Every structure is written in C-alpha cells, then in structure tokens.
Length: 246
Image 1 (tube, rainbow, N blue to C red):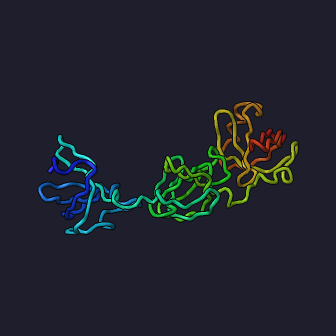
Image 2 (image 1 turned 120 degrees about the vertical axis):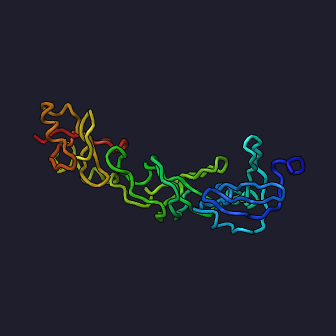
Image 3 (image 1 turned 60 degrees about the vertical axis):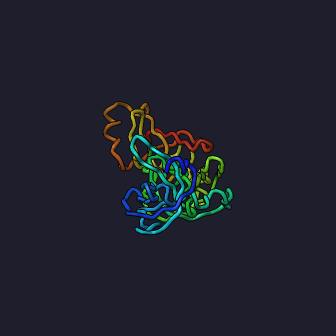
C-alpha cells in the first residue's frame, strides 16, 4: 500500500468509526486516521458533524508514521480552502461567532473556515491593566471591524473600537487640569493606584503623591470612591496623572 500510495496522493476509503479526536477510515489493506483538525476548514466539535460511519469518502494521505504504524489522512485538504477566495476588505464590518478564547484576545469565525483575532486591546477603550478586557464566552456573536488582512499568513485583525464611542474624543470638554473630580480605585500596583473617572477614562495616582505608606494602604481598596485632582492630561497617550485633592 505504501509503495503504491505516496504522501499527497488521493485514495478512496470507508469510515469505520468516529472518536472525539477524529475518524478512522478503512483504505482496504490498512486503516488511517483523519484528525478532527483535518476534517473541516471550519471549527467543529465532533467528527459526526462531517462524516457518518460506513460513509464512502476520498481522502488525502498526509503522513506515514512507520514507528507507530499510523497513517494520517486529510479530508478538508480535498475541499477548497476558504482563504483562497477570501473577499473581505479592511474597514469592513463583520459579525461572527467566538470560537476560541486566549489570554490575549478572542478568535471570531467571520466566515466558514475563516477566523479573525479580536485582540484585548481592540475590544474596548479600557486599559487592560485596569479592567478585565472582556466577558465573552465561546459561542457568543460579536460584531467588529476588519483592521488588517494578511492573506500570506492567513491572519485577520479585528477591532470593536470603531463601533463604540471613544470617551477620550472630548476629554478636554469634560476634564481640566487642577480641578477636582470623583473617581474610584480600579487597580493597585507597586507604584500607585489607577483611578477611573468614567468608563474608559482612567489615570494614575502615583504612590509618591501620598504623605506616607499608611495613607496609601488605607485608600487603595478596590472600588473605593475618592476625590482626586488632575495634575496633567496627555490626550495622545491617553494618560492622566492625579494627585490627592487635599
């Protein structure tokens, strides 16, 4: 069989049984395995979404592992890769299902077999150090804007920001230097406190602004309300520096 069917050739087979991780296929004199990742260009939960036992199919030989006596097969490799006829453009608004969550963002399937990355930094205008970037779950539907497409690397970058109001756009109308405002403690670090004035508007009250360490520890309770005076505003860097109001 191996001599007649080199890696990359197409062969006929019949599905024997299905497992969570793939489908076993009888090729006549030998059995092969299609791993779930090689069944479909789209994300699937189980091989039964694509194949049935005793179904006659064509597969592509991907690899021979002579040590383990295994034959790796591909089913999706005989289907058209959706990236080969991608029609999306940068700036386009798309909607899709969240299919993967990582510590740096979520992956959204915007078309059959095509996923884009919605990075934490592109989910909202909140600073990642101050708040949990999102509360998304697998299966959630999200709308976003395509900000870049790399067909060579098969990567799409998404952003929610163009679809939501930027609280910094009129920052100078709402907040002025040397004026006192109500805020709440979002996060404590070893160099100070991050204070939120409103959703998406946060700044740093540096540890050096406190009279002593004891005062810093007393005030640094998360979600604690406090009055602060704005020392400086840097709109381009989206940074605010605070000092104590008294």
